[in-house]
Image (cartoon, rainbow, N blue to C red; front, side, top):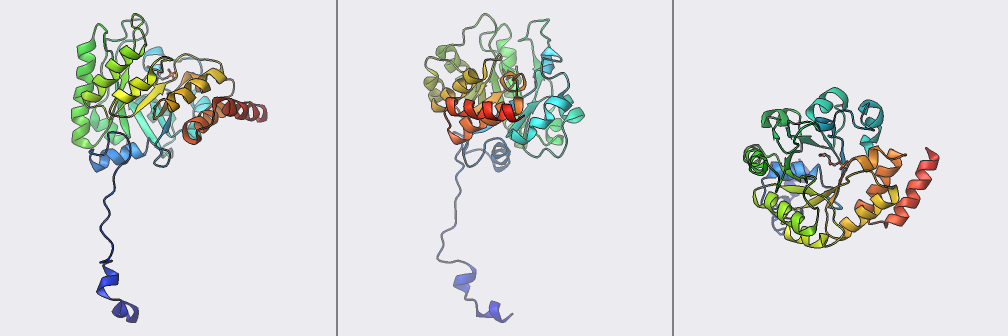
Length: 293
Ligand code: R5P
């Protein structure tokens, strides 16, 4: 142990180096507990601060949606390109290989099918099961302005209380009924309510006018849903604008898994979200990858 003996106390204890205080860069999340931040770091890439969530939870109210009929065939091959998978516990247990070691955001509300009033949801997952599944967050639909507004907000706040107890972030998903307009005024209201009541981050829709005011007035990160299938270039343009206007990523489903070339599309989306590529550049990449496939 001659080398140890020779080492001075000052060297061993790094007396000249002040102790590090790490701050967690994700918007509005620095005061969360360590476990919560650690889970969020499975969702938001610590280098870019952004996320590409692959949303495949549609079956919880739509059944076998186009592109999700055989998720073992269509979705599992996309997993290497997703920062996070948003899915139900049924699909997670039945279909997703346990070797998938990135974030899982578990759909935690549900009840009615597309045949009924969609906003009539309840909590559909116990926090203990979310922990058992090693989820990185739970997601709950919040229907601001809908007929069951209070209940859906209460679903979220109950999950937030449980989540704070166990270190599980809650993703508040602002759902829009047919009768509500997805304009900036509505989205500011819905996203701010989710954040004020404890959502660690919020998923909402992109709007062409004033989206910057939606991200600016929400104190936690916002990710955008993709919505109905668009031509690939348009979906990439929407992602590009959302990122430029303050979104922390996308939670995209149909625009990826209903694409003619889903693997090429999710990789193109990654270029926009993580590397700041323009939509035009990413679309060119998409075309090249599509032709190779
Ligand atoms: C819908 O309610 C689901 O929660 C989806 O996760 C969400 O709408 C995102 O998927 P898409 O990009 O297909 O809209």
